[in-house]
Length: 103
Image (cartoon, rainbow, N blue to C red; front, side, top):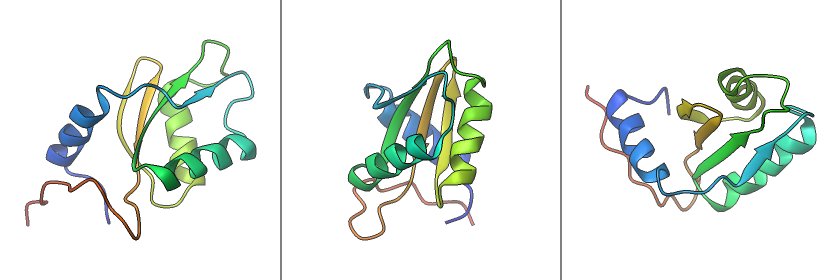
């Protein structure tokens, strides 16, 4: 799947609104262990909310970019304040049905 459309990002933001952060990113920043933790969480659910703590070395957007570069197929529907929303379609059992992209 290529980049998400604005309609798809808005749909995912609506779904993520009620979620609580699953992973907290602290002063270690984006580490291999943290990437493994996010990878494991994405294997059980398609949509994640992460919290970047005040002690983190990078801002939320830079952290989100590092995570998406470190993990295959991860999209960033939203970063707001210190909160990141990540999406990756489950390869075998997708639960979230995204709106169709305009062709």
